[in-house]
Length: 328
Length: 210
Image 1 (cartoon, rainbow over the protein chains, first blue to last red):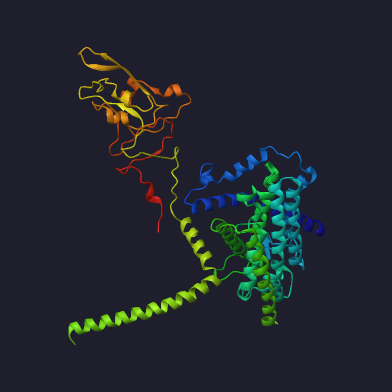
Image 2 (image 1 turned 135 degrees about the vertical axis):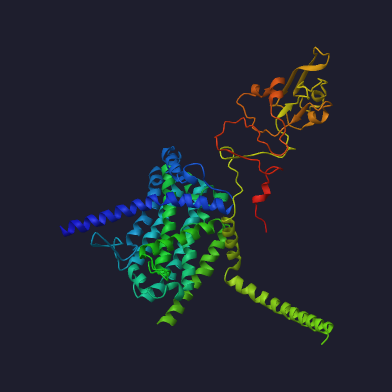
C-alpha cells in the first residue's frame, strides 16, 4: 500500500510537471510579445481576449491545424525524430530539479521535487547536452542549406558554451561540498552563492543565454541571415515542439541560475512562502531574458566563438582557482 | 568688507572651484570609462533605455474598431459640393475643375435652370481615379467644390466610387474645429473619435524624445 501511494504520488508529480511545462510557453509567448511591444512603444497583441491574453491559444490552434509539411528530399525518419529529441531533454532535466523542500497537504508532507539525485548537477549537464542532437538532426534531415548552416552553428555554439558553463558551477559545488541541487540550496541559506561566486554567476548566465539560444547569442536561428536556422523547414506542430523546447530551456536556465547562485527558495528580508520566493526569482530571470532580447543586437559568429573560448573559458578556470584558494 | 569686495572673493572662489572640478571630472571620466568597460556600462545603458521605454505610452492608434481620428482641416479627403444661402447649388458648371483635373476624373454637364442660371445637370467624380490633389477646389470660381476630412472610402467595386451630384451635395462639409466626420465604415458604438483638439490629432505628442 505504501508503495502504491508513493508511486501514485510520483506519477502525479510527473504528470503535473509535464502539464505545467507544456502550458508554460503560452503565457511566456504572450509576455514576450507584450514586453517587446511596449519596449518599442507598441501595444503587442490586443485583439484576442483581454489585452490579447488568448493570443497564444489562437496561435496554438493555428499551429495545430496547419499543414505538417515535410520537404521532398528530407530524411523523413530523422525529420520526425528531431523535434522530439529537442523537446525531451529539457523535460527530463526537470525531474532532477527541486522547487522547494516540502509542503504539507492535508497533513501529509509532500516533497517539492521528483527525485533528490546526489549527482543532480551532473545529470542536468549530461542531459541538457543531449539537446544538441535534436538541433543537428533537424538541420541535417531537412536537406536545406539554411537548416544545415543553422544546425552547424548551433552545434559549435552549444558545445563551446557548455564547457565554461560546466566549469562555472564547479565553484558552487566546492562551496556546497555536494552535487545535489537540494544540498546546494541548503548551503545558501545564509549567503547566496552570487556573493561568493560573482564570476561564476556571470559566466554561467552568459553561457546560459547561449545555451538557450537567446539574443544576443541566437546565431542558430538568426532570421536575418539564415531564414530560421535549423527549423526553417519545419511547420505546424513540429515547429511548435521546437518553440516549446526553446521556452522550456529558457525556463530551465532561469531555474538553474536561481538554484545555483540566487539561493533557490531562500528568501531575504520579506518572509514569503519559499515556493513563492523561488518563482519570483525565476520570473525575474525570465524577464531578464526577454529584456535582453529586445535590447541587444546579435553577435557575429566569430565574436560568439571568441567570447566563448577567449573570455568565458579563462574566466571560469580563473574562478575555479580563486575559489579553490579562497575557500579551501 | 565692502559689498563689492565680497562679490569679488565669491567670484574668485567659484572660478577656482569650477576649474579644479573640471580637472577632477576629466580624470574621473578616464577612470570611469575603464570601470564602465569592465562592468558593461554600455550594455547597462541600453537596458535602462529599453526599460524606460517599456513604461512609456504606446503610440499605437487602435484603428478602426477602438479609436479614430479627425484629420486637420487642411486635409484633402472626400469631395463635397456646397449650397449658397438660398439652398441653391453653388456650382455654375463652368467645367474649370474638369479641365484642371490632372487625372480627368470629373465630368460636368451643364444645363439652364428655370431662373436662367447655368447649373450642372450631371456632376460626377470618379474617386477611384482621383488623386486628391485639391486642384478642383483651387480652380473653382464659385467656391462650390471642396475636399473634406472623410477618408474611409474603400469599396469592393470601383463603380461604387463614382459619386454623382446629389451625393456630393449630401456629403458633410469641412469640420473647422473638429466636428465628428461621419464614418462610412460600420463601426462599434463606443468608437472614440479624436476631436478634442482643435487642430487635429498630434502624432508627435506620444513620442518620447530626449
